[in-house]
Length: 373
Image 1 (cartoon, rainbow, N blue to C red):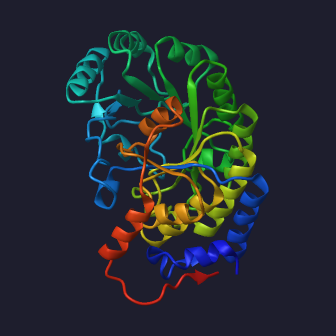
Image 2 (image 1 turned 45 degrees about the vertical axis):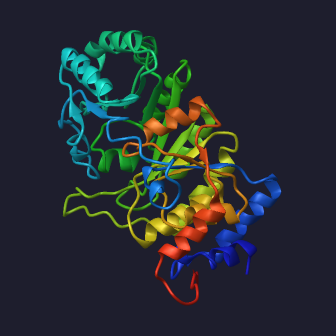
């Protein structure tokens, strides 16, 4: 049994959780070969529950998500059906965007995620909004703007930069079948790589996302997406796991296999050794989330949004330096931008006290039972 598996067995929230012993051994060997363990940052306001009174949430308005199309999207992809847009604040005209941003800043916002539904070519039509984005940035220079770009050409990427956008995010899809069947889109894998290339050629911080399990719960084009990203070296990469709450009944999504996701984490870390690799908020709840998060910690990912219980203790016992960024992560991008701005951001915590407090709080009695796969 590997030392890391023995460590996992000592952590109460991992009781009964199935972990792949061979995969953990590979992760342990990778850290041994790569040298000193890296820092890990946890993004969540929930640490106030079991850390200190000085670690608290940022408030729901810190990183509002705003949609220029309201809840409308032409694609209606099978994993989303445009429902992800519905909770966003609508700003259907440039004048609405200016008004909404001023209201949000007055309420304490530090930045925004600007998004919108796509047209039939997977393009978000920001054209009329660039002058307003520039006005926002000139008036409020400290206000961060993260833009969900979808697919872009070179001119569009440059216009986004010139408008004052701080960070650009886009999903990179590596399988043609996923583009056609899940997204209902008549575009090619090459179009996604070309859009990433154009964005990286600007001065924008580019943060591509890979949605694991996007092909109805199966990993299909994720490794090709990883290779596409490796070729273009963006500012950071975010991995999320599909949560198809709105999938059609005739095309249901399976829950992605956590062990396969763990193997992808290991491959992603090896492919992108010098690029911040982050696990975003979206992933299935329950035991599978604990498995996924444990693998993320052991694979050497740089950050985890809304980590499962026990991950701070696990990271600490693996001798990783733990920092906490007490900011909202319902969209995840806000924290990524902040993290890129300052590598030392986040609060260091007294993990010994944290673990003691947690063990007093939990009511579980008896031995620890991590199940070895």
